[in-house]
Image 1 (cartoon, helix red, strand yellow):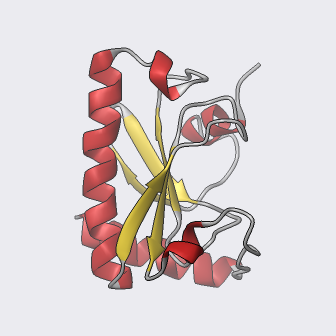
Image 2: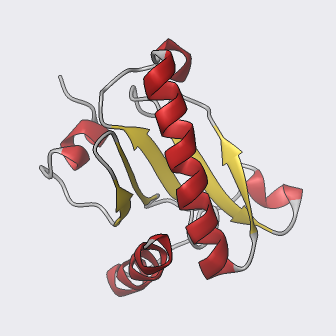
Length: 130
């Protein structure tokens, strides 16, 4: 059975996509810790990030760096990364804009945005990604 992320890749369910290349895709987290919180995933479905082959792992991280730079331009914040890997059985990296360490705590309340706000945030990041 495909993960929810594979369904996003296949455009079976909607997502606020901010960047994509031949091997990876990035989209806004719908339960964000901060404005611009983005998930970066390989298009190949592998459950655990350290089970990725070296080429896929390297590609994912270089792509995440480019996305993080774009998010930083939009949010004017540092971008923290987190790899937890238990929420969805598909390797992914969280890119989280922050000013204080406490903002990177997944136990914090999640922010709520309207569809229009998500669309606006995604458009700004896409534009900055170029």
